[in-house]
Image 1 (cartoon, helix red, strand yellow):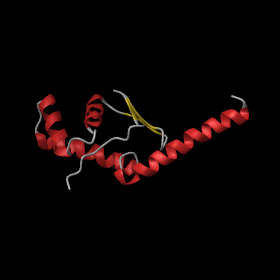
Image 2 (image 1 turned 30 degrees about the vertical axis):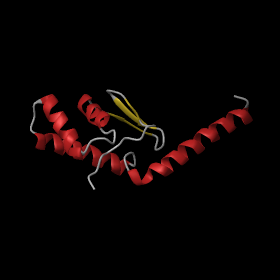
Image 3 (image 1 turned 180 degrees about the horizontal axis):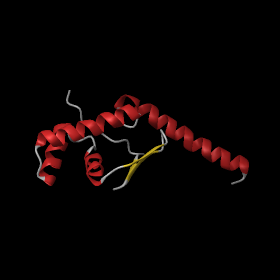
Image 4 (image 1 turned 90 degrees about the vertical axis):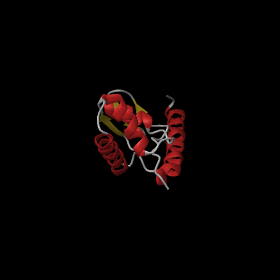
Length: 109
């Protein structure tokens, strides 16, 4: 099956930063990386993402694909992008949210 990378919904991305509340990881990113991550919505293959980036920046698809694959592999190693963990991420995020609400109630905040 062809991989269609999808950044989890709770991950916050802007043109300069990526923040994953699940892992607590915050990293600086550049504009091109932000564009690649925006295209990782689960509807495109890595090759399709690379083709889009190549057309935007007038570069070879092979060069763009190398960048796309490097970014995807890095995010997988960081635990941000891994479809096998998606269910556990959702459970942990819900637990974390409920835990914070309970703490606020106990501490009166």
